[in-house]
Image 1 (cartoon, rainbow, N blue to C red):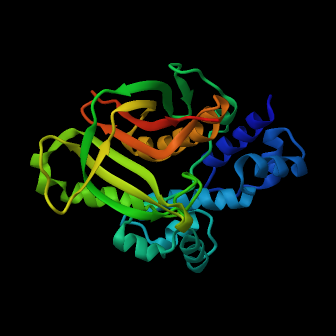
Image 2: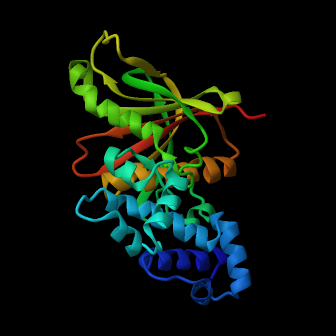
Image 3: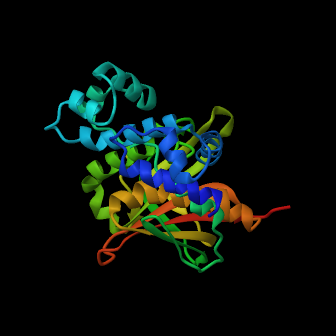
Length: 304
């Protein structure tokens, strides 16, 4: 067994028993490692200590419970291993910047810590070869866009801190909030849109300020646009496209998107000695016969 496989076994165990008492000794036995070496290896591969990881995964999962109004916050806290309402509130606010009560009142989208699929770091695929990992399938291909596509929606500057790296940073999901606004208001300009395709676009605007601009919108179906909207273009040209399928839309736009992005930018591109321009797009498709599918588009850059 590879070392990463031993750590993955402990991650799977923690996920299945996340509401129970979990100690490092039990996990080290599952991994077949000494407690000392297990904790060192865990921190190296997960980038968190065991206790930090357990707390962050619990804080990720409790947001689903907070969306249910039939449970008291104290009961949720105790069910997930927090010793008191105060302890839970302190941990929740440290992670997300708001209290559980404030979250329940406003229901913002949050960036939460997702369960890693460590195998993806150690698995390499060629172009056009599907990779099955966890609850998703991804595939990377080159694609030519012959004609530019115009999108209409909203955009905002976003602080990198709290948003990147995806799946590890915690806080209010600003791009997610922009999508929330778009879907709430898009009926007012639906006549201008093709309802089958939507696009999220990220690009650097002021790196020195630690900001990027994020755009959320739909494919323009005709010329012209309402004054209140932003317009972005997906230029014609050559792209690397990472296609993603997942078992549900919720998994697709959270865990699967985070893990696919990490694999593409952190593993696949460096291995193939490829660089990309400071731009990426997330393309979402509807009416896929029950398939939950999206794509990440990036523009290859010349490397020296």
